[in-house]
Image: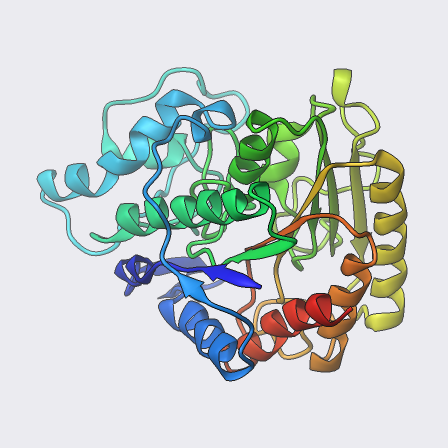
Length: 343
């Protein structure tokens, strides 16, 4: 399996985030990607290449133009305003407030274009975002050109980013951009299977009223787990998208047997939909020792995930999302990929 990976991700480093009780170093840090990269070499998964440069034309079909225009301006405006440290929002246009008029203040626009204080900026953040986008696009093109599979080792991740908002460490929705790339290349139907612990709320929001992209999420119950405000089982799509969104919320403490049953049902739905290509939003924060998650999968479970996905016999693009138990992230993420390859 070929991997696309950009060293430019490392520019997004040293930022902080708002967690319960205070400001802490971001859990989403460069070592995550580097450990996965090293594991790819250790198991000889396949060649690793840097991405080609791509414009944002495809991204503009899943994200609003004003939002995409905003992202590169954050750090320059933050510096020009005389501020230092991490650029982070602290005010949001919630119910009863105006959410239709972008303010001029950089502080206000950070809140206008986000849903939490987890997508923060330092000097190298935009370059990392763009390189992550390019990674997904380049890996998608490998699959479009006939590769059975490819791995987009994206950082920062993307599945919490919606059409006009960032959050949860995510800025551009890499899986959504890849799906649009496949559609623009001639596919009529694409499935996105999100196996991250946290619901891919951005991916759901982008495709909720569309029937050309089926979205399936296996995730923690939003009644008690981030991102809280989306991801319930009764969210099945709207308009033309009715019946094409599938959520599988599960309780804290979920282990392999229950999780695998949800995966089996998701795979059944994918087979019934009949997509030409499958995108897997690959989060491994379902691991039992992940510091911000509460499922109980063990390292031996991840190759089983890959084998089951391989059983769908679809061209498959894996796009890296979450996973924060950094010591094991390489074993677990690459375990899915080797399981897929060996099936």
